[in-house]
Length: 312
Image (cartoon, rainbow, N blue to C red; front, side, top):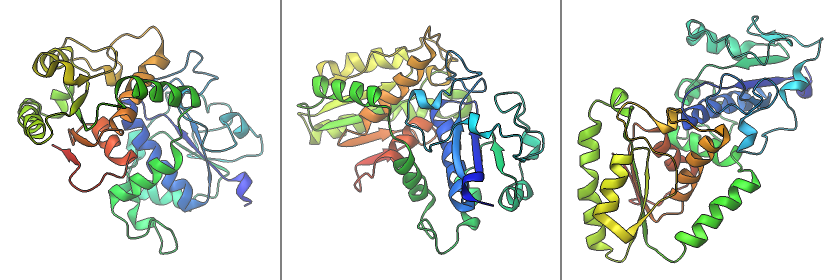
């Protein structure tokens, strides 16, 4: 099969923004290992769907395309598809996810597939793919985190308008306020995933205060989805605090990062998350939550020097 006839269509996982990017990373690794051309299409199955989700991809609202092809290039009547439930007429649908298909054998079938197009909307972590990386690949023998870092840094290229918006905020609010400690504190519905969230969140203040003792002239860049946490840290650190004007929730069961807060413009929902994430990468040090996809993404998008990043 010629390479230009061999594709992997990466549909949305349908979760929070950086969870979906983690899903994309695993699929991009599969594309590299199977020598397939990757195409990302976030449609109606995405929390960040575009205003026209049946025809317009949401991933490219934020990032540059990762190949020169789109989902429309896969509607060739001569193409074959795997799994068999997919065909050229239903690629835009978002209701064909079947997690019962996911197991060790299903992953092996992906690597054995000879169909023109493989379609994936199931999150396959990089951890499950280590055994398929052969010695000739540059990722062979690397740690899981280094593999994620390679994939994030290779494929995620911001759209120019978003890059410029982030740079503009940095120049106006952060450039002359170094050193900066980035702090990401999750609130809202994260308590359901992380039962000890309150204990973790209560440990931040001591670590921040210790940092300020060593760096008394430093600033703090705060990322949080919680209005209560935001108000608390604004009271504690006053003018030292730097933050973006994003929507936050006053509740403990709704998450802005998973789409719980209403946005009139769904694109803005993703922009807010991306801006905070990429601005955190400009900090000298970072403290985050290891169970949060936002914090983990920050750790992967930048190659941090030793002892400059802590994930609680």
